[in-house]
Length: 460
Image (cartoon, rainbow, N blue to C red; front, side, top):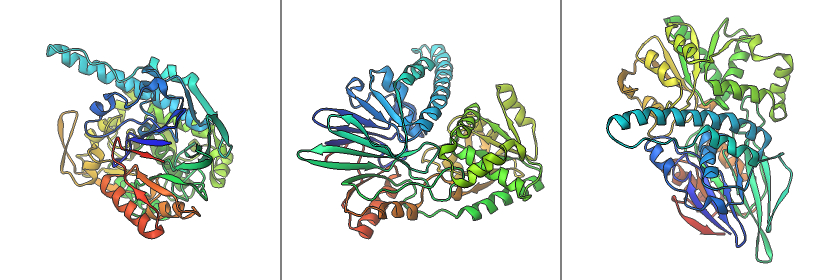
């Protein structure tokens, strides 16, 4: 078997791996690039013929792992899309949301292009392209072994990252022998709200290993919750709003869960939380529809009542409702997409609140290089939003404990369960992080490690 590393290497977005045997071609993830030059990267031709791919395996629903699936199908893929039921249910609204954004952006750019005498701009994909992928999904449970034919078997394990996320085990024939490759997917941290801790595997010949936080340690969740509570109390006392850029899938549900618990425990009172993301509302409903993925604490809370029983929860449904939030001057918690501030409604709320010193912005997730979120976290004094200079005067909080990714210790613990000495390919981390984590794994466990570059291929 040969593996081609086509995306998600020496960076944290655009994950895509191609596997080739003598008889079949398989794809693991087909993610969208986010950050600087993302549109150019996402419009590049695939490095393979989509019509020749027999299986696409999705490790989870986040757009950096699934965002180019409609483009893949539009360009000829007709195989099976294999993933867990919860991931399939999350991918559908997420990609419809993405398609609406693609079409709206293309319409706006086309107007500008035509005024300049240039050709119209086509969307990366459309709502119709998303509809075309839905019949191709094959939903599989965790832990059950399946045969793909042509000497390939596979199984998903719970990765504990977001609802439905999986690590993918795959067996293939190498002459008379059978070899196993393990794709970590994005590994969650232990003790995350709502979902179960990540499962571990005891052996593999090859491991494709994420390294998003391979160079740092997270704060513990109790400390993070204390900091969240303080941020809200301090901001409300100053007469400001709390803006939380959050991924619609995963982070939003975790934050709602914790806020709900804080009110139940009488640590916060009568708080109004506005979720300004139609996708986040759909994702929250999907979470509630999949209690089989919950840990024991979340199952007990679900039986006790819904989120609306405690926090004053408001979902916005129209553009006007979203705009009306900007009239609120104080005591509002606004959770809005997107998580890295590159798109979504959060940019509007930053425009109206970031320059106000009485407000706070809470970052509860990874901010990739080149994104607006990363610039703010790194201490920019002025940022550009919708072509306007906006001063950064709000207090900026970074809560690492909410991360859906395992930190360095969590990643090493996950690897330590492997009883043999596999060959490790370190992916899904910024270049310096991936290289440092690769060296640490080599030093700690004596494994052979690689940090692939984009387009690089290895014979297994």
